[in-house]
Length: 342
Image 1 (cartoon, rainbow, N blue to C red):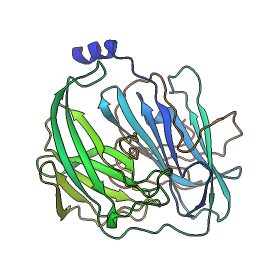
Image 2: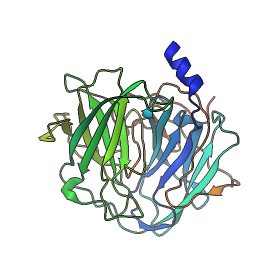
Image 3: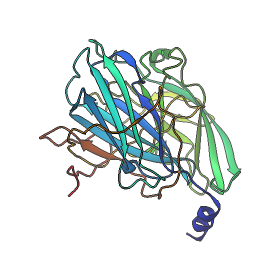
Image 4: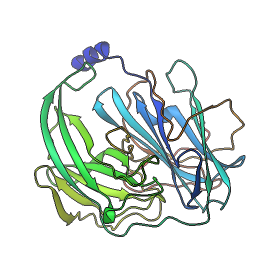
């Protein structure tokens, strides 16, 4: 506790700010079963933002998940919101994603951002098979800045998508869980986009991973690919020094095809990883349609950086915006919550 207080005094974390939005701004022919994914970077919690999907001026019924995880130190987190429509979107219709800060936001002024895309008539081409990855353990390294862990584990992933094929729609995600010594997964430690909209032929390249060096690590991770519709492949476990085990993880399930597949913890998208973080949620809610807002428009996958929140439990939540029906997401248990808050 004393060490954390000293580090906090020396480090000046930035507030949690929107980082990327998918589908990409102005994307067309987007599959009607697409789920929306928005990532954030800074210091704070996912609940500092509300993300809502609209068809025209009507709020779309969605089941939503949010999650966060620390990335390069205790004062930088990647957070995600993932919205999966409860029924197929209308074909050939312009849709709008509204991202708005809540009363929990600690930045200097309220944040408003909008992005839009147009659906086609097709559905997502689901991958068949398993992703894979090589994994290098760089070592337990000393802090380089006041915002780092005093000692941190550093890893390099070299993931390959199912079939070696990047996602031309730039909507797929890769999720990583740290395994304990018994081979059981804990919380998500990383989520990234499989492909970026500005380079749809490229894969994710090398993905950096940092973990607190004060914690024991098995140096083994579980990898799952999530399609643009939110369906998940089976899992593969990989250990540092051993390359890809080539053996599917014995998870007792072949992948999630029925919901957004959110897991408990954090998301990220950096220049080194083509993607963002995806973890899991904690809450169910219904959201009313929003009025128009005075919004700043973000380009492409919106890149914005920011200022200062409070580090709370980095947990996921699942929210149902489906009018008249509550919903929950897969993996870890989630908390249900009514919307608007009472």
